[in-house]
Amino acid sequence: MKGIHVTSEIKPLKKVLLHRPGRELLNITPDKLQELLFDDIPFLKVAQKEHDAFAEILRENGVEVVYLEDLMTEVLDLNPKLVEPFIYQWLSE
Image (cartoon, rainbow, N blue to C red; front, side, top):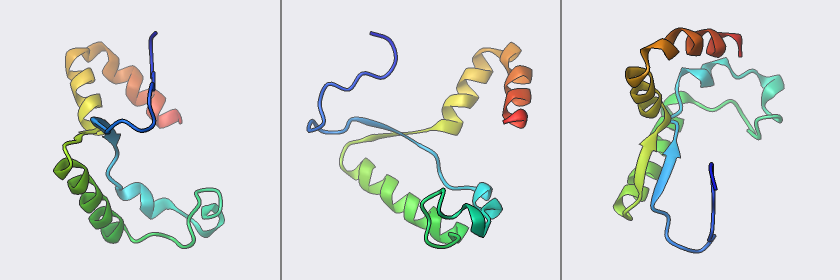
């Protein structure tokens, strides 16, 4: 089977894909809060501090933490022809 395949909800977590909150939080407007399930506009530095603490707890418990940005960098380094299409798709979305 290709793609995501979860066979257990109770086995120990081995690897997790994360995205550290970044400047995208600065673009959140009050009218988007409910859609994003936020009570208030999050403060970037607080969100990053909380994220870093969470990621560290995962690591301390033997979980491999993988960051989306690092994976994309690896993919684009291995496939330079994908860089331009990726950038155009990202900008259009």
